[in-house]
Image (tube, rainbow, N blue to C red; front, side, top):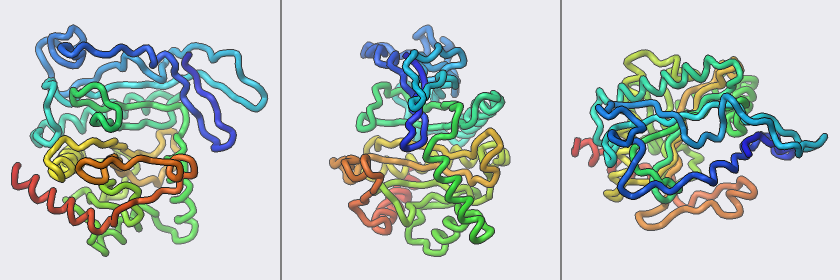
Length: 322
């Protein structure tokens, strides 16, 4: 089964992809992303697009099961799912990659984004990475993913709505105002460069929930100049290096790139990246329990200003190592 089902309460689509349960466990001595696997070029690669072997969305989806009613809507699970391989090295770490390599990766993100955005049935393109056992990753080879949805996901719609309300009240971009407030306060800034600011938000939901905000008002990857795109790659790498230097390990996280919708709505959206690291201490995981999951009432058990100071120290240690 692969279809979309609409939740009339939260007013959002849910991907139902029961075929993904059939994904096999990979043999310990074999990786499809490594040269020699028969799945990628034997001669190696720098960065590479890879078709998702078990996509939740596809350009040729099956017809939905005949379960829809007047209340319960279904739709074909149309969309695109790709994997972006960061390196041919099975145990390569993002924090160790060169500026040039990160520029290639950022350009590949843009390439995939453009290809998916050109599909008239795609409304939103989502670039993301899941890393670490704590977030359920079974494939350690460094990689991220890109999904092209035929709808605008709920969280993105909430951000669009919030920005529209703020613009109606002030005439200004909500994200620009947030960034200006954070830069004025400075206490939650971790690092910044010419194009991006990395910080823990005032309202941070996760102890180490780092954000990367474009200092230019651009709505998506396509608005970045070549130099800004290159800097995006190194900024993401430095953010990961900062997290890795907190406790000297490969810090787990979910990296979520927020672009504006590709269908033309939200033309004033502001490009940014959100990290969701599930750890609240070196050996303690922050679980989203009933309040967070059932009511969306988040509780951060730490102080963002204090955690930002920890991250600044980790960033300084990382830069010295490089």
